[in-house]
Image (cartoon, rainbow, N blue to C red; front, side, top):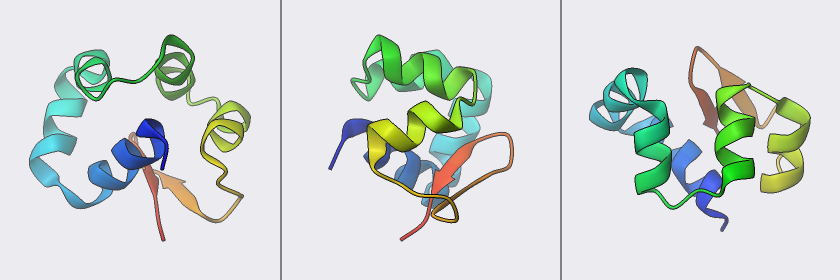
Length: 71
């Protein structure tokens, strides 16, 4: 699983991590080991790039200020 997809899933189920992401998204993404491209895609909510990087398709993730992946 990609680090980006792993972080997206963790954001969807870990309220403390999601709260930290709200305060410092770049710090959380750096700590998770995301690449520059992954961090940029998340910060810009670039869905096409996120789909390409994670293998997700439409309907497999949702946004609510934080992009979350659903199984």
